[in-house]
Image: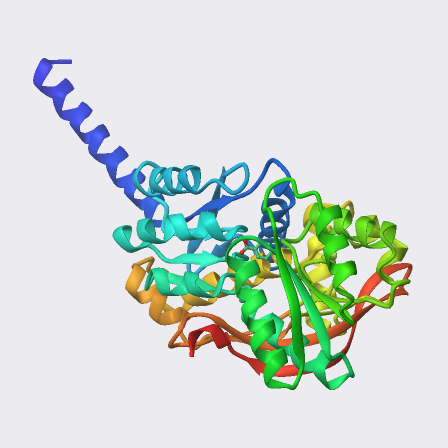
Length: 392
Ligand code: PHB
């Protein structure tokens, strides 16, 4: 082959490769997942990803002619600096089209400016401090906010004869949101707040805090702790220090009776009343299909919790948005598609508020009961169409 001929065929091959590469890139939507996959909060990433996989198991991995690809990154816990660096790498090196995941508030807050700068939608599948969605116009949240979940608990408690409450909350965004929302709604309904404590987010020792509650002799303690292992430790302390025997009721957001750890907390949870947006025992065809798809995709080792439901709904929102944009991943177009979107979620019907990009949903009052061969949060009352009250 003459030199010139050789050059020509090499160039032709290179051009062909470039065309094939572009076509491939065009055919893929990349989701960069930033979440907690190790350390004490490792179940957050596992549950959210499990929910996403359940959706893909049920609906296939292609939508609007595009193949969905997930790239996972581990923040290792509440590590805002790590979360931010991982998000930056996902955007600049991996060229992701959307950022997804986010179990813990500090991680979500740290990534918000990255989403804004890159003009990439950021789909929050848990982090629940009210203010998060105001930190970037590219954020949409499919999970919940603490004020949204907490206010119904305060109203229910006041209506059901509880007059004096002490609050115990984790000392960071969602806990402070819960404390404020509970206090305001409870006082507005005629109740009295008799004290409050904040517990550390990392490695808390609940004993001394529980003793303080006992000494203050409230009628009930309202509790917010981030879902998972902390609930197990708190329930142990509540039992050991005899609060129930002292006549002090426990009420909480459903984070404490998280479906992922409820069995591990065991019998002391029986009768515990919580307010929340999702229960694995929610009685609907959508939830039955979700629980089955979750087991099909992930095995039966872990019961899906609210983070799994949000992972599943986050994927539903992304699929619906891509259908609306005809497969375009343009950030503005996707955000427009999310606004006002309605989804038949395993938790019941939900909507993305077009103004706040936060989820509007029913909040249920539930009680832990032994049913269906295990401990479950059984819904018995509800507050429909709850928006995030933190935004008004
Ligand atoms: C949060 O960090 O926003 C968070 C974490 C766990 C929860 C709720 C909120 O259960």
